[in-house]
Length: 281
Image 1 (tube, rainbow, N blue to C red):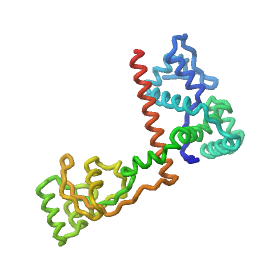
Image 2: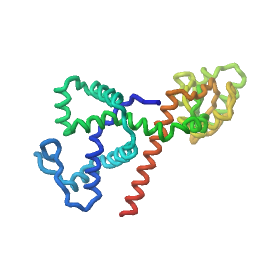
Image 3: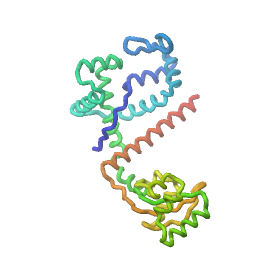
Image 4: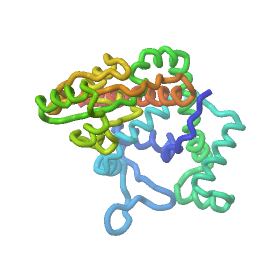
């Protein structure tokens, strides 16, 4: 199974988040929010913050969308568990990341965060459970998705000259065709972008990160072929492909695609939430 060792998301666990949303969405009399042994304070001196005030603060600090994202993730990963061994390894990694090397430090951290040990375990194992969700949801069809995206994932090394004058671009193209001057020389002297510093050389980069018109030029050009000057918005470009690096369906690529599919899924969940809120209002 492909498991990324990315930084574990620093949230407070699904129980707290569920409580906050219940406050935001229900008609129940707002309750006092306590963190540890103290009421949350805002302003000069601590005072109690009820549920309605808390939602207002979350909106004010632009944290409500993030809370909704985390809750959507928690709902999705709820069916996924970790083995005792996985749980122990996740906790060890969690302790190392936060330098909680002793039981005393861990107890102090729990008190500061207002968390229980069960909530800590939930937090420590969360990223692994997210990875299990990704694998279960998209793993079987990942290779087909890769093949659909391959042309965008292949990486290109190419030379580029960009100028703002179309007639001058045509002149440079003609000079390149004669072979008396090299692409590197003309790019260093005349190109109007940062590629001038590298003699016009760019890459390796995937087509997905290139301007759509430039990506189209690269896709329809042959290796080593000099493209005719083409207009892209307010500039003219001359391009030559130097090297094509085919995308490989290796572990790194699989993780990248799983992350991409997960991000797309999460964005769609947030759109659905926004639509439901609009209907409710």
